[in-house]
Length: 503
Image 1 (cartoon, rainbow, N blue to C red):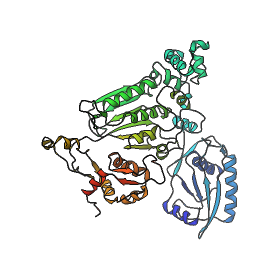
Image 2: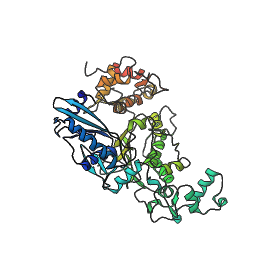
Image 3: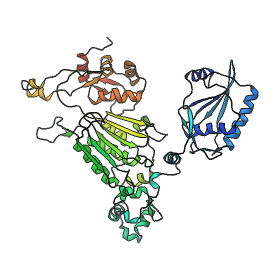
Image 4: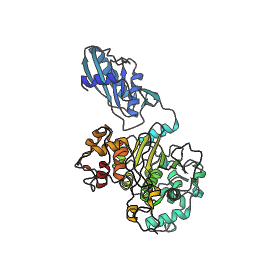
């Protein structure tokens, strides 16, 4: 850390990765700070700084004493031991000791009294809730929810026929030919411990899993409008059963609440779903396999007039964020479930599900809500065919079209060319008006004053691409470093009818 970087940190104040301390004399207090950083996302402990950010300074004798205290705390008062790094910066008010603590790989870390601390905003707090303790052990790979035996369950809760069909399909052999009892087969497959099926075994082959695990189902509701607090709903279903049954019924629920659109097909055809079915196939499997089963809550499917929300209990593991999973990185939170699901559900286990869904339908928003401990996928629905009008508020109608009364006076060819209704954000209009050739993503971001690339792509660029007004110059390699974006013929036509608000 340089003096300039230190000055910038002090000016911004404390946060989850930067803690200010005037001094330390108590080794337990220092150990607690080290444990909190190690159990969360790491950070910097700045010693010789007041809570206000003012440098109080340390002497050389202080530095020597603190280094010895740090060494003892990290090796003797933190379990497992950690290896913080220290550096000293000279300021006009004295020395500042900067202690760098990396995020730990062997969570949870505890102090010498067995207490677990985590960062809570700019402060720290002690972990006492069972679910949070389980999650820390889960992150360390010490325990997985799907491998935990389900209390009160027995082999009588297993659908022996379904298990037999799976065994035959996967191993080309009848279970009877092995000479093993059902519970021993489950145990050999990692689906039971002793005589008790674990969660994976119950969810995959249970006759009625929700009898013992009532929270592990799916709640599905279809609303007529766009708000959650609507007093009316169009469709509702509590979806239970094993994972294969939940997947089948959930997909059916979503499909029956989507529209069919013609899309250049013959008049007598059924039409296609407004959002491709494969999008929901991928996202539903992802929710069922990768949700956090230490959280006693249902998966939720909520269909609105303009979007469909798929909400899974549990935020992403600390090693992942929405940008990483967008490009195919994954973490097996439930490894036992995953190893068998590849043979039961349309799941490949390669981390490619979400990238495939986004490729098939770019208008997908990923939200890792750590405060609410949930992961949300928002799929924007296709807007209806019809006249293009200018909505109120911060949305701007971008093109005028024939009204219903005019349809009868137009030729059939003109009717077939009716544009999709566009309700674009003001910054999307600005972006179209400023595009003149082939542009990089950073260039496009500067046009509308965006700094977060992921949100820019999800909220601004992807909808324009889905509507066919912006295209990639290298569509076969979406992640290419040479990738550029340009207007399509439809985009140029749309631009010609607009004037940038900045012009």
